[in-house]
Image 1: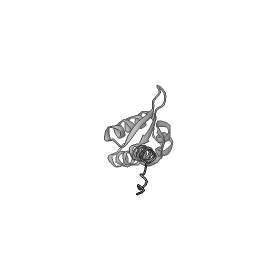
Image 2 (image 1 turned 120 degrees about the vertical axis):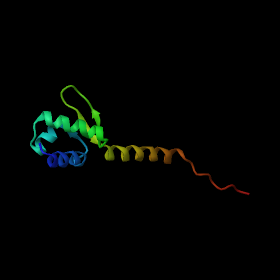
Image 3 (image 1 turned 45 degrees about the horizontal axis):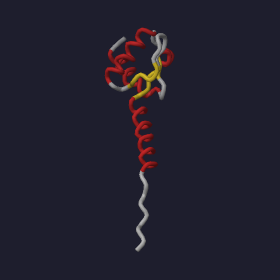
Image 4 (image 1 turned 180 degrees about the vertical axis):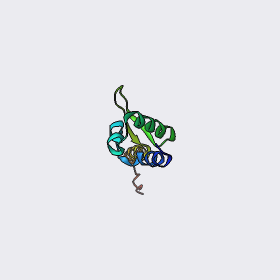
Length: 91
């Protein structure tokens, strides 16, 4: 694999969607499984994706940019529900 193709695939991995797997890379880029697994490991090292579900046969990854906003939205919703507005005091 030449450097241009390697860089194109590595930058395109986080843009593939919410759920990324080895088989998705094989189908999308027409590469063999061993190359797909190496590219996924490199993407994890770069910090562009993270593992969501791991198994001995198949692992599912998600982009970091997708995983972070969902978590912060849940935290904001929790904070909004716990804060109570004080009613003005009557004199």
